[in-house]
Amino acid sequence: MGEAAGMLEVFGLATAFAAADAGCKAGNVRLETFDKNKPANADALPVPLIVMVKFRGSVSDVKAALAAARAKAEELAGVVAEYAIAGPTEDTEKMMKLSGMDKGEPNKKYIKEV
Picture 1 (tube, one colour):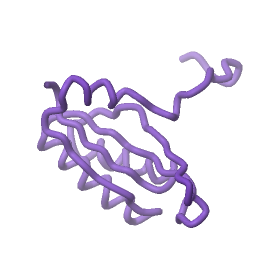
Picture 2 (cartoon, rainbow, N blue to C red):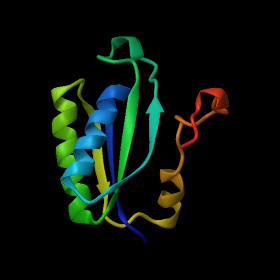
Picture 3 (tube, rainbow, N blue to C red):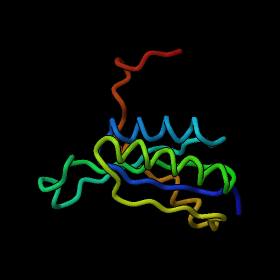
Picture 4 (tube, rainbow, N blue to C red):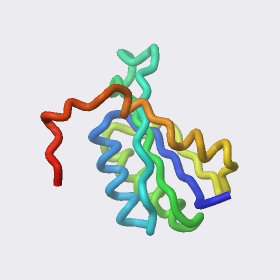
């Protein structure tokens, strides 16, 4: 078992970025790749895309990050769900790496090398 994991599902990508920024400033955490979900009832939602922000770090830092991220997301489009895992299993660790955001090959001509 490794670092604690914190997951926050929010409405919209802009909300996800703002929540991630707030969370990273509140705790000594790092981000895993965002994930996305467009549910069947997307037209009835405030924003038709649900994005999961994933924080990693110590239990206390992940909890601080989640609290700050939730507060920021609630100011914006809103929160769907929140959950923290103190010690993810090996199988859960594998699932944390999955993301619908990175499907397909990015268009290389629009990616600037730094």
